[in-house]
Length: 557
Ligand SMILES: [Zn+2]
Image (cartoon, rainbow, N blue to C red; front, side, top):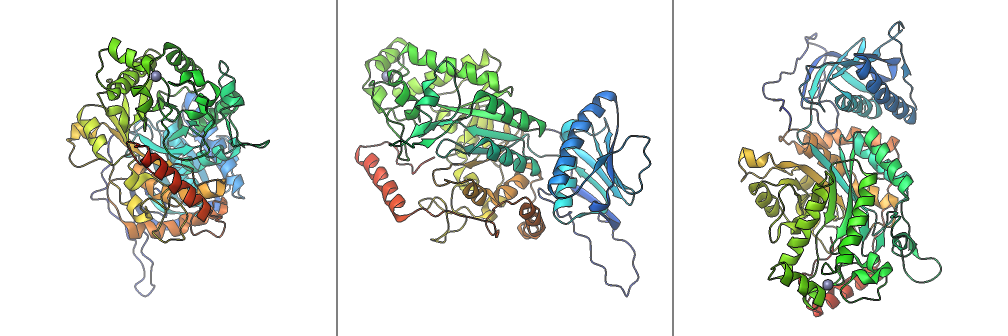
């Protein structure tokens, strides 16, 4: 979890000034989102457009890593209309310089120190990640208010998991947008991209052993122009590489044993009934799930996992594990036989058996299972990580049991929920509103945990379910500025100051404007509101499920 930097007692150096001149007190923090942990000010500010170039000091290994960080920054400066050339150590610069310096004394691998003076900016870090975040601070300042106050910054993240999830199954977004989303995460010092790749309504990743997953499962709807798309293995690798250059780990999610109708449409023999099925065009929870009683279904899932793991070098694999109705298993001879042979008395235990088995399968390949909090039901394999989404109590329970936890409760982290309770506000109209202030106020480490249990809280994650986000601009509208608030929850200390945040957001939005982000409140925003017909269709599907005796009438996840 790193060494916390105490912000307590940090002084703001107010400079002496002639008494008749009214001096604006420097802001307590720079106009920076996420807020830096500690900053001291001296008199004066550096105009960042005056930076003439970037230089690197350190060991050979460090210089190599720093060069790629510098290159990214140079490209980002160019995207904002600026430039920053690379300076050789011998160059004598005629102006302020950005210096990237190796400093083994910086305690946190993602932390950095930053000194700002008239001669430029010095970013010190022990490695490339810290350096990267230091350069993000320079970039955010450059693109928003354009200056950094003289003085120094000591900064490091609070949590190791600073995540955002994107559902590309309910709606499909091209690689170009996925990369833009990753850029925006990196800009906010977030480091996990949870890529939700499969659903009832679509399968989005090429699997060579099962070509029908992309020929059939990736497309929905009748006619000659069905809706859909998928990512080839080359595209997936490109995204993973792109993310890793920006210090973001990509966590793939392949839903099992529920939310599987798209796969069953291509391979109905993986179900309990044999089908036939069509890729779902409705939203919701569906009774047809993988038949875990049959060995060939388990073989299928194993081979899919193996192919997916080849593309994702990160330590985590997300199996979903949520919202799996047990109706089919209850009436399936194969599932019932499995329960008998494994000594399981309920279908819930059958799910738990399946999750444990998958967890062992992943462990044998050096990977860790992550799942939504339903995976806790019926007991969970040691080493599995729980994503607490149905409130926070599952997260508390999991941490108390010694599991790692990522907090992403609907109450604070579901960015598909409306941003205000206004009727006209786009978003999940059937769910409570999730206001910016609420996201900002979230405390991810539950107070009922002991410090030892609290250490299992890896961090926090925003979830972006996209049933109501048919366009890329809708994703941006729903995500921002709430993701800005969440980035501060994830990176900065536990102290909160919403008014201060709003003040900083004003300048931060200038940067988002320059990047063309269509956040809520932006002139560029192009929000989509669900039509009356869509609303009616949704309510009908929910009522149907309820009439069939669906165990949970969850609007959707
Ligand atoms: Zn079955």
